[in-house]
Amino acid sequence: MESYPIDSLPTAGDIHMACFTAVKNAPDLKEKLQNQDKSLTFAMVESNLIMDVFQLLVAATKAAHDDKIGKLATQTISSEIIYNLSPSKNIAESLKRFGIKEDTTSLIAVKIGGNPDEIMEEMSRTVAGNLVSFSKLDQERDMTKLRQYYKIDPKVTEDKEILNWIVGAIAMKNVQ
Image 1 (cartoon, rainbow, N blue to C red):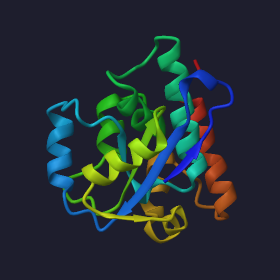
Image 2: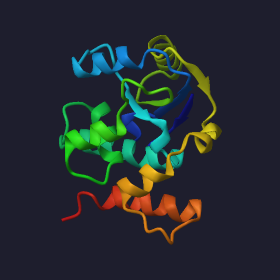
Image 3: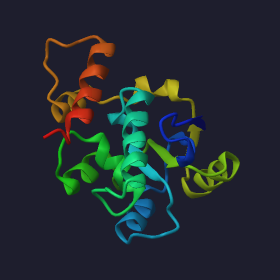
Image 4: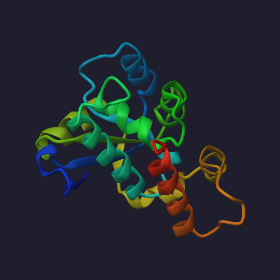
């Protein structure tokens, strides 16, 4: 698990993230999410739609900020993280695209605040999968979906440029 401070919101706590592969209980996790099970206290994101950890940090920081000012678009900070990953303002579409599915085999768990040891224990207890390094993200990436969802110009080919495009789309979503 990796943890990152939110410098602009030190009282929110750190952003904690763990990447899991070979996930065996995605149908159960998806059912718990659909039933709004309160035992799930972290976001679960499809790892194949994550270009870089920075993408998650932008979405989670925005969620923490919106939570602090009482302006969440969704019901929980966990769903807000997933919603913020999408360039779409359609909440249902955002959660469907970026949240886990019944056939998910690789996911990233994200939580804002809390004790890192307790969070890691909770994530490992909840997700039946192998904890792996974020360096494995390169192998998971679905560039076809990333290009489609973020409307990335085919001429943009370098990873850094693609990440800039994605972060720009996330940042611009709520600009009027």
